[in-house]
View 1 (tube, helix red, strand yellow):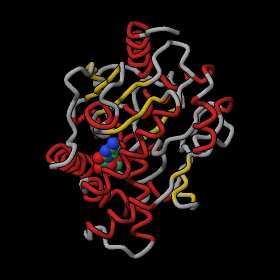
View 2 (cartoon, rainbow, N blue to C red):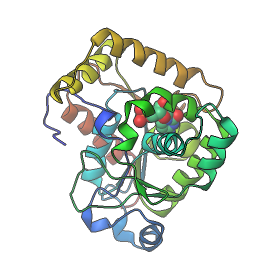
View 3 (cartoon, rainbow, N blue to C red):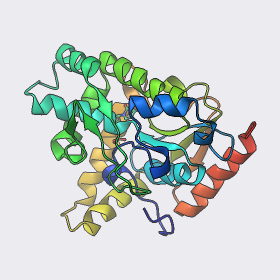
View 4 (tube, rainbow, N blue to C red):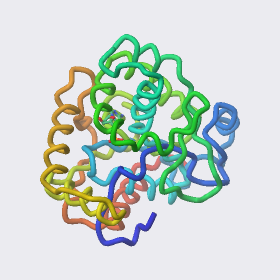
Length: 273
Ligand code: DC
C-alpha cells in the first residue's frame, strides 16, 4: 500500500483481514491465544482497539491498514468475512436468498487469516473452511449478493461472535459497518469515515481503470448508492456512526492527512502504554 498516494482508494482490492506485521504472527486461534498474554503485542500508542466504519470507498481499508501498521495492531476487514460466507454459499450451490441455509453455513464455518510474511498485503489472505478465498471474495458474483447475505441476522450473529473473539485476543484495527455500534461498542477510539458519493464512485472508477478493466462511472455510482441504501436501511445493524464516533470526511483529503488525524486521536485517547 502506498500511503503517499495523493488520493484515497478503498476496499475493492483490500478485502480481507490478516496479521499485518510478520512479527505478530497469524491471527489463528493459537496465535491469538499466545498474544493474549504477550504485552508486546499491544499497540505502542496504548490504544489497543480502533473501530473504523463507513460506507463503501470511504477510505476505510487504506486508512485502517496504514494505522494498524503504524501502531503494530492487527488489521481486520470484516467485509471480507461477509464476502467469504457469500462466496462459500455460491460455491456450494446454496441459494443466497435462502436465509436459513446461509445462516447455518455462517454458524459453522471457520476463518483463518494467515500471515504470509509481507508487512502489508494488497489482498490480505482469508481462508474459510480451509479454502483460500482471497481472490474469490472479490468475484463480481459476490459483489452482486453480499449485501443480501450481510443483512441476515443469523449471519451477522455468527460473524460478530468471531470478530469479538479476535478483538479479545489482541489489539486490532477493525473495519466494517457496525464495528463501533455492535461489534466493539467499548472501543476507546471509533472512527466513522465518510466521503461524498461522487468522490467514492470516482475512486472505484479510477481503481478499475488503473487495473486495466472496463469501467462505467454512472453504473459504478448507481451501484454504490444502491448498496449504501441496502447497508443503511437494513433492519439488523444498519450502517450508522456510533454516538461517540469521530466522523472524518475524506472527500478532499489525502491518505497521509487522514492517517495522521487518526494517529493523533489514538495518541489523545491512549491510556497506559
Ligand atoms: O466493505 P465490503 O464492501 O467488503 O463489505 C461487503 C458487504 O458486507 C457490504 O454489503 C457491507 C457488508 N458489511 C457489513 O454489513 N458489516 C460489516 N461489518 C462489514 C461489511
